[in-house]
Image 1 (cartoon, rainbow, N blue to C red):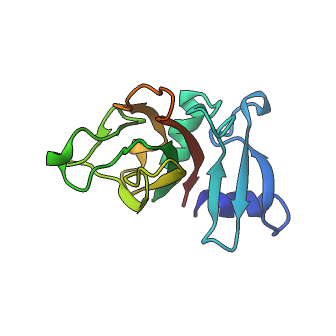
Image 2 (cartoon, rainbow, N blue to C red):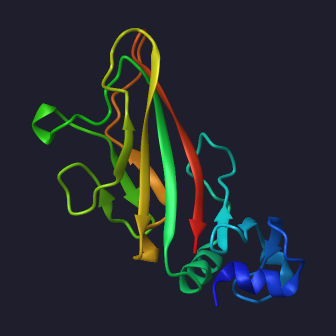
Length: 170
């Protein structure tokens, strides 16, 4: 039984925002999630803000979310101005690296590599572009992403900011 199905058995059958307690302890450590019953029972944990890798969840509650799930997915978008973040090949220079919840690294040419859905940061024409990374895994302990490394420092004319998407458990 997936996590969203457990929520549905306790509440109405409509998708929306719910407070859940994955460890079934006291309600004081409940977490707010978004459940989508049309997306195979997806239960999503939103970051505190889309500009930070902080989900305001304790390790115990996250461990229970991991235990109750079979797959997890997260998107991270890097918006960039004249700053490539993911070269086409590893010989073209350093690329951004992502630290997983369990400490492993997602990186170009590494054992773990994110899906690069859109790679428009390679365009350096004085306009803002973006690169979209999707992390999807059956090794539940890998997500959420907790660190982004290897981004060059911003300077006038070369800037970036990232947008952290929710981490969604199935």
